[in-house]
Length: 640
Image 1 (tube, rainbow, N blue to C red):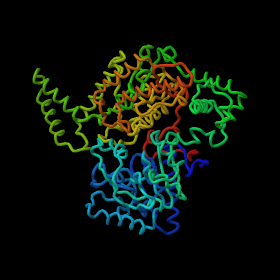
Image 2: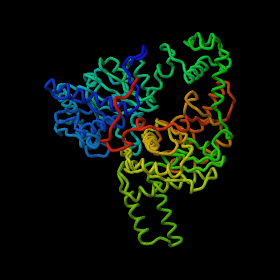
Image 3: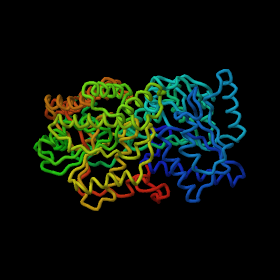
Image 4: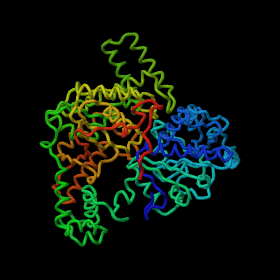
């Protein structure tokens, strides 16, 4: 679909639907090229974005519907320097996530070599270009997009005539990759990448983007002018490029955020609220002070016509927003509640104020920490705890020979550990214990007890690496067992899809997969955010006021997570500590409400709510959460 402001076709669909659409197109291209009597040639990408496509291709192959025996592939890029067998290499990524599971011929796989001597780099990149030409050119190129708008590793300043080459990586790009390398300092400063011209030569291009953190750059790439500073904008000039984005990544497109600007709209209550909030911001007026001229001068005449004049419309929206505000007396009381926390600090970071109020309202609460979060603990934290054990033994002589041997082994491993090396099981266990103890301390800030903490330790997370396994039936079964045990009336889950590591998204899929199989009455689902960004006032169903003392207590609970203080291992693009982000976002939400002319509060948390009794259907859950790769997938999905 295209609108007057969009310079390239954009498909907005859920991620599983995108994976299905792109994989199906790949299958069609393979069949078409064979009918023409030539080899199909695919351009492939790495990272978390195309994983769903690769899993769908694997499923199609296993089901006997897709043969890769004559398919030739070329990958976009590789870090430099980088050994092919490194856990960080794109070569290893491709074999682990696709090639090992299909019948592709190894000689047909082409990935830039990150171990080429520097004095041979130019010749190697030229040979890569020649290999693409010899294969007949790329039929379909899969792309992701970085926060700087880079495609491949074509950083800001890359020209439209650029070809495969070595390139210095932008600071933002290296920071984005920090999670995969266990710290920004370990990320290579260079990479080898196909150039923009190489990408543009592909007969078709499919760019995939997911998550709110991609929404701003997607709008820039789709609606802005083509410029070297944003390489993805060049795709506007490609005759057969399509952007596939999920609703979160497409949220800032004009047709989504302010559709009344690009054409006629079918007005709903949610859209009316969004339009009036937007108009209040544009005119710098509170809602009840908006007049008819404000609506007419800002493309909202059709909305005004529904109410004849501004007063009734302003009043309707004002009252709708007022009804979203719920103090402690309007929150659940005496209920059975499960709070699902992807990592052992997301509960207090994202909903610490709510958790405090729920406890005060005498709800029966269990906080279920879905993953151990152990990879997000610095090694120096382990050294500190092990050193404490040595001193404890010195003073009290409590350790036996096995304990002393364990301490020696841990210290020896850490002394020789290489950057990014997977921890030995003993170190992983110690790091898990550190996070669990911090989580208990966090909820005790609100007067809760350690018995209210459950540590699910879901298997998908237990790789010791930032790249996780797919959600599987065991993850769903563990989650379902807790839901069946507790029979909750309310569930709180992370809806923060901007999580740069993808764990929040996977944990949400696990809960939805469990609820799709839950035979009891469906609980009311409250979706929270906060670690990476907050719900907009227009999106939120519930706004929970926090006093200055309540916000301070929430921050004190965040402080209990000492391993994440000062400098978290994986902070994303925001250099501030989590408590600083929380303070700014909660205060900002209250400030927005104040500017709209609603009551003034010190701070606010925001939530989106799925009403009590609404079932989660299997069609709404990623297939990976419902069964093995061979499970049936939905029929042709709906996309906009």
